[in-house]
Image 1: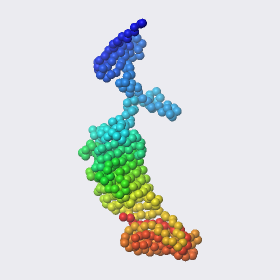
Image 2 (image 1 turned 90 degrees about the vertical axis):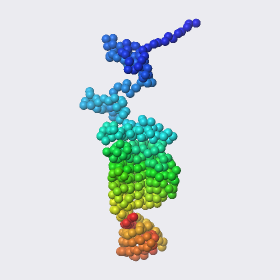
Image 3 (image 1 turned 180 degrees about the vertical axis):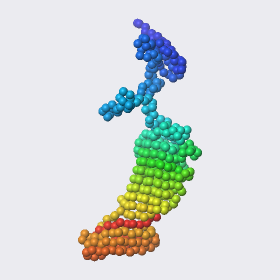
Length: 453
């Protein structure tokens, strides 16, 4: 029987820094970096270049070996010219190309709903919006991407100026916290400690959900705190508490100005829910102006949708939906609310609000013969509405004016009729219920104007 013996092959080995010029086809092993090289040979032997070539192993840095990157735009069907002409394309390293984007997972976040990702997320924010460079060098900043997943946090994550955070959707990227006494996110200055020369500004948070999972009865903090923030925009973000209607909790979003004035804060396509008897959005401070809430949804709240203190200068709402919300708003402002559109759980449109005057949309109600129909609840204060009442042939046009003290109501109905008398009666009882009755089936169209609290 033949005996086959495999002989030991010895190649050069040593530290990476001591790697010599290897002879043609001679191999060298770097002990410290665990990388393998082979000598190119000499150009006089026919080698295109002298030196060494790395042989790929599991420890090779493949990014540095890929060469240069040039955008080609192949999907467009032609070669894109990136430089001054087709012979001089712009080239970049692959590392530079990959560094155009950054993910929290690049800093250790897992997003599996089990591991605590607080430190990793904060590390990403601190490094990408470095205190050393934050005030003057925008080159280091990137939008931080949160891939779909559930990111568990245990303490407040500070968001510095110029931060841009983006997820995969408010039902796909979820950031949760069971810490009932601290926000998930809170804005801060450029030094992350209150001493930075640049205060909170130019913040963008979009396409993610923020959720409180702590014990409902113990919650004392908001989910998001925007303190002394200027130019913040939140798009397609859900704010969800952990309470059923009636449970005790605090607000979901808190906007304040403890350091400097705050302004230009916008919520677009956001949802606010399960805050129990708390408040979804609290705007409270002496130097806050220009807050907008557009195309948002408020639901499962037995208290107030949004609260605005007396010193806030300007809040605008547009086309919002109010579901299971006992009171839409609590306003202390002096004529600075502008609200257009919006609807409630019963699909009743809110109309237009300027300051504290509400001009409702036109309502059309059918009134059966002989039965009084409740049209609406008149707010405490004074108001009026113009109306048209008709049975298809005969018409009554009028203006109904009222004053409601909360315990008593006075009203007058000034009208003109054409054709036969409709025997109509518009009246309001002591609690402010407005009703209408007719002797024959008719339709009433009316537009309510009133002052709101």
